[in-house]
Amino acid sequence: MKACFIVCSYCKKSFSRPVGQINEANKFGWRQFCSKDCHSFEKTKTRNLQCSNPQCRKSFKRRTYKNTIEVYCSRSCAASINNSKFPKKHAVIKNCSTCNKYFKTNQKYCSLSCKNKGQSLSREYIIKEIKEFFIKTGRIPLKREFYSYSAARNHFVNWNNAIKAAGFDPNPVMFAKKYIANDGHKCDSLAEKIIDDWLYARAVTHKRSIAYPDNYKLTVDFLIGNYWIEFFGLFGQHRRYDELRKEKLKIAKANNMSLIEIYPKDLFPVNKLDQILAVLQNSI
Image (cartoon, rainbow, N blue to C red; front, side, top):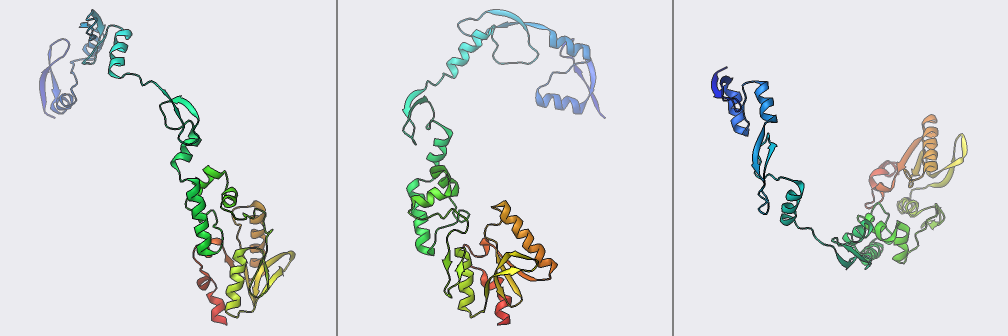
């Protein structure tokens, strides 16, 4: 590797060094030394300096390994200059943009919760969206369908309160409300009614709530010939519900049953029963 002679920054002695290292030091503004001793002596050497505070200008000695533009003889001199450059912003008494509570700060909101509410959609907008969804679909939206669910939770604490504020019944109890299908069958949910009406509209003969083999406490939603159809509407939301689902799948596998699984994503926001139950249409 090509070398070149340079002068030590401490002892001023000439020494040889690879050109690549010399170029790197020049690029970053590093000082170069002929030995570790010279490097150490340079770091511990004191220099005569003058305080950069114009009201002080005191001369003092200090170890200064790095070249700095401004040096100060004390912390108080440094603090006085920094305070003049970056003055402290004094808090003023103002009212929170969300709750109108008076507080002393430079912020716009008094708390993080008020900030979340203030920067999210308004209560009126959320209620209006729920009502418009009901007008278009004839039902209240599921929280997974509502794109501004987090904003609704900030304003109303939970989804049921948002539904109540819009003037609808949230129906919080599992399977408490029954729906009557067009063929007279009682359904545990609106989704089951949609499936039942789909079958009835296509003249597909079906039975409701038929017991599983080996476990008569478990019933299937729809039985059509050899096809067992289950709507798992609460999958992933209730531990006990998920346990019953696993039990049904286990029984279906053990008895070689043709089980068709339907989930909320298959009905909302777009009804996909034509694709999922195509095997039934082909057998009609």
